[in-house]
Length: 161
Image (cartoon, rainbow, N blue to C red):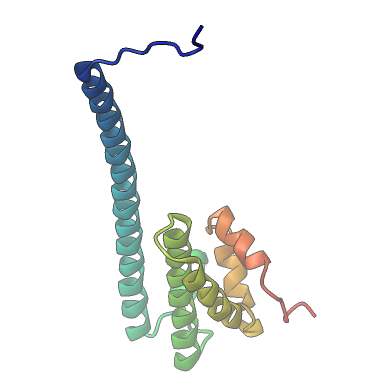
């Protein structure tokens, strides 16, 4: 007695099976491509918002106005309490915060390699540790995504020492 089980596979049945596997594989591929396209579109929208903030920061800097005073503070003199150099520095600092927030979004959507994000974190640490600008961090932190705040919390804080 033979222990082999006779298996009869027709060429048509095998072709149909392989065809179904091909369709399933194609659908999975298309789904992954759609998800990546959506991530890229969202990253483009985030980049556009960042660009708009840059334009706003540039116009307030050219006008000698502190962006934070205009946008985030009520009953303010819009920078009368700061020198032109301080206003420019504060506005540039906010520009960096917008840039790093945008970079975090790109990273969180897997559109930026980890080694690039790690390098960005080193640069972010430099800005985070400009202690005279910590009030800007505090004012903006409420608007940062939780994941970005978690990344910031990993940075060495020389200002609280």
